Length: 95
Image (cartoon, rainbow, N blue to C red; front, side, top):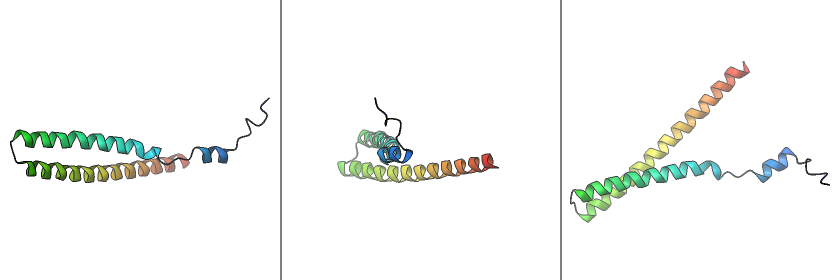
């Protein structure tokens, strides 16, 4: 009935499912969620201290920038460490 249904090649399958966007989804969601929570906490604390609107905005943006840098460095280091770990484990298994 469907003679060619099982004749799919691995190359054809990989071409159909080779989207690179999915690997960044987890990082983006985690980073944005962390950024929203910590920025809200900083701004809420500054508002509670009855500081001026300019200081609230400055501290909010400063927190966003610092949090973004922190998340980027943390993600880079964790990804690099994970790759090194996999490479070391592969070397152990091959020997």
